[in-house]
Structure formats: structure tokens, C-alpha cells
Amino acid sequence: MDSFGRTVTYLRVSVTDRCDLRCVYCMAEHMTFLPKAQVLTLEELDRISSAFVGLGVKKLRITGGEPLVRKGVMGLFSSLGRHLQSGALEEITLTTNGTRLAEFAGQLADAGVKRINVSLDTLKPELFRTLTRGGDLAKVLAGIEVAQAAGLKIKINAVALAHDNAAELPELIRWAHGIGADMTLIETMPMGEVEADRTDQYLSLTRLRSELESFWTLTDLPLTTGGPARYVEVAETGGRLGFITPLSHNFCEACNRVRLTCTGTLHTCLGRDDAADLRAVIRAGADDAELMEAIRNAVDAKPKGHDFHIGRELAPAVARHMSTTGG
Ligand code: SAM
Ligand code: SF4
Image (cartoon, rainbow, N blue to C red; front, top):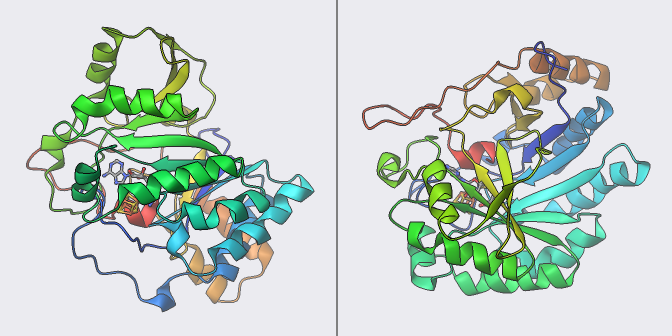
């Protein structure tokens, strides 16, 4: 529990800063990736994640960069699966761009993963190629099919972009609901220097919601996630739709999550530069009790709220890229 009485039950773990795509809002075209020595080994990732589970974390989400490009990542899933079997952990999930799902969906299901998030902003192959700087939409769609066949429940995440996909979003939502997937829309967040002007692409989801309500019936669903998403049911499609609006609303009072980067830095707030270096702790030879103490101290200092704002002259609220923190 942090000093504001919030219980932290959810850890998001970034397992790599690398990715096979270069989404325009997430990365610069030419990224410099981290030297291997700075990135936690799979054993270190397991050790720190397991310490969180020992302290009461109930849900792990594996993210990145693109988690499925990390060599040996399936070994991490299988090994963390022991906490599901013991009952200490309720859920392990994954956020992926879907390009390698066809290859890995079966192994994910075997490791005990039940639900995954797939990021997909458009169903137009050309626009997909532009937004991801070279990605192949067909691979992602094939991956989604294989994942569903393996029994994984899918949620589609799309970043709402004023110029690029705004007009297509109703169709994307209808498609996602049509394949039995939930859908969540995300506002662009000012994280890390990228070439694209995010002010220009900013689309208020409050406005988008009003537009959707001009032709659909949206019914609010009760809050359950402890996160920034607010969910509605769309009567016409029978599916669930979430809105993640970090810029238009404050969602910090109920925040239940912290984030571990692939270098072992613990961020207790996505929108602030606070950080605790857990890699230094374990590489200095700390035992599990000392590691847990370092985690407790960091969680105790979790900030009350974030510091996002979007404006033309302002530098990003947070200098690190989303691919470092994992979203
Ligand atoms: N590579 C995986 C993927 O794309 O799902 C996992 C990591 S990615 C950083 C996690 C999520 O962050 C994706 O849904 C992506 O669309 C989102 N994201 C990246 N940069 C963002 C930004 N500047 N604002 C809002 N969402 C962003
Ligand atoms: Fe890669 Fe995900 Fe960032 Fe796109 S959003 S560049 S897929 S890490």
C-alpha cells in the first residue's frame, strides 16, 4: 500500500525496449536501443516480478517494446506461470503488436495466459504501413485469428489520431466487436521525443464519445480495472468499448499499478519522472528481503498524481519513450 492508501496489485513489466515496428507516436524513426548489459536478464525479470508477487501483486502484464521479439520470452511466461498454479497470482497478460502472435499464441495459452491486448490502429494496410513505418497488417490479423483459436481472449487497443484514423474508428470498433473482442481507445500521450507532432494528432475522446453517441447507444459499465479506462457497452454491436483519457481526466485516485522497465527501473507513475533502480539493488547482491524492502520504499513514495499536459511549445511531460515504460 502506498502513502495515499492505494493498494498496488498490478505490475506491468517491460521485457525489452526493442520492437519490430516504429509507430510514429511511440518511437523515433531511428531509435538507439539499450546495450544488452543494461537490460535485465530473463532470470532477473523473473526474480523482481516474483518479489512483487510475494508482496501481494495479483496481476502481471508483460509489455515492451515488443515483448514477443525478446529471445526466450516464452521461458519467462512459463516460469512465471508457477505463481498462477500456486494461486499467488490471478493473471498474467500481454500487450503486443501482434506481428508474432501466430507463432507464439499456443505457448502463451499453455503458460496460463488467458487474455491479451493487441494494439491495432487501422484496418487499412497502407495506413498501417505508414503508422508503424513498415508493418504488415496481414500478419497481425493472422496472429489474432490464431490467438483466438488457441482460446486467448483479445482486446484491441487503438490510439485515436485526429487525422489518421478518426474517421475509421467506428468501423474499427464494429470489426473488433464482430470478432468477439473488446476495444479500447487511447488518447496520445506526450512521452519521449518523436518526429510526429502529437498536438496535431490529439483527438479528445470526450468529443469522440459524443460523436459515437449520435448513432450508437452507449451505456456506462461499472469501474473495475483500477486503471484509466472507462468502459461502456455499445447496444448496436453488443461489445465493450473503453476510453483511456489521461489528458482530459484525472484517474490517479484509484491507481493500483506500477511499472518496471526492462532495465529494472521501477516507475510508480506513468506520467512522472520518479524512479527506483531495482537493477542496482539486485546486482549489488541484495537478498530477497532487501529487494522487497527496496520495492516497499519505492511504492510508499508513489506520487499522488500525474503531470501530463499537451501543448505546442512544451517538451514532453516525461522524457522517456512509451516503448521504455511499456504503456
Ligand atoms: N509493442 C506492444 C504494443 O504495441 O502493443 C507493447 C508496447 S506499446 C508501448 C503499448 C501501448 O502503448 C500500445 O497500445 C501503443 O499504441 C501505446 N502507445 C505508444 N506510444 C503512445 C503514446 N505516445 N500515447 C498513447 N499511447 C501510446
Ligand atoms: Fe513498437 Fe508497440 Fe511502440 Fe508500436 S507502440 S513502436 S509496436 S512498442
